[in-house]
Length: 232
Ligand code: FPP
Image (cartoon, rainbow, N blue to C red; front, side):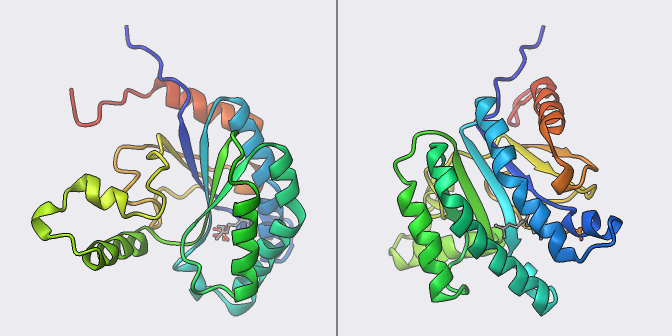
């Protein structure tokens, strides 16, 4: 008999489908993003209650800068507003907030807000919520290569553990489960290094509709998967 997996320690989600959620209702896309933003804390709560220790949410990719200007600025304002309105609630829920991605392309004001939210919650002991914003897997790996060269590490001394140490969040374990909502089946430059052996779960449910039942389905599907990590 095969044994069921433990709850995943780290779940990572590609929150896709906000635009279609809005379109179905005849609303502007940004209202879809707003609805998606409102779903982040409740979903984080459910995963935390199921024993998940790390949750990474993909909110803005390095490629998303090429969306129309109004959508980009809407997403940046949404991030800013979410930090203002919800950091305290995350803090009270003992959630530790971490930012994953670049900070050099956001305004000084937004960068300070992000850093303050991370600082306020840094000693919290509950779920670690990594918000991937201006994140791309290839960008992260290229950055790790740059930092390895800058540290003067010789080619012969570079192995997988060295590269992993130079990624942005070396202390966060690799995701056990990557979920993508919205019906597409691809990784879209998300956690390319870290997801090497993640279980992938795709659902057609649009992100703003992703609720407790969907979490349960994803986790029970994960439980049934046989993880072999290249072994037999
Ligand atoms: C993909 O849906 C979603 C995004 C590119 C943004 C995800 C953002 C949120 C869930 C909320 C924002 C939160 C913060 C903190 C900024 P899509 O627009 O590609 O949807 P579509 O495929 O239906 O068009």
